[in-house]
Length: 157
Image (cartoon, rainbow, N blue to C red; front, side):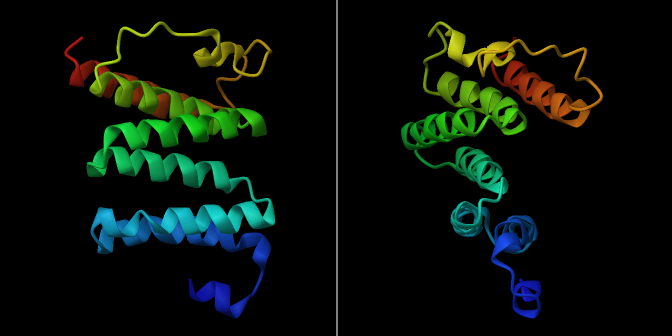
């Protein structure tokens, strides 16, 4: 955060706050440090920084694992998903979907049918080919499938 004082630039404040919050998680308890992601999101939205969606994803993800009320977390995740679809940020959307599915299953809503909106291959009204984008999104797919693996292990599938 001292970088923000040395080189004042509103354009990069959101991303600086986003990455500095990662280190706060190792120093402070998760419940008190995750609120900083909301500040980073606000700063990113003011400057038009694309990290706003990532801040919302990380905040909701940490809220889920820190034990906040599931209903409130699911509502926040659905709002963030809607905003991410509006901004057409496939990377963050691909990470949000498995975590939202885990939260819904923890609430007992696993029997809800998957709608066309929830399908990542047609999330923005256009086909998405995993094979054609494997190099571009390799880390993303790794994280997405790891979340699916965690879901399978949690629910013994």
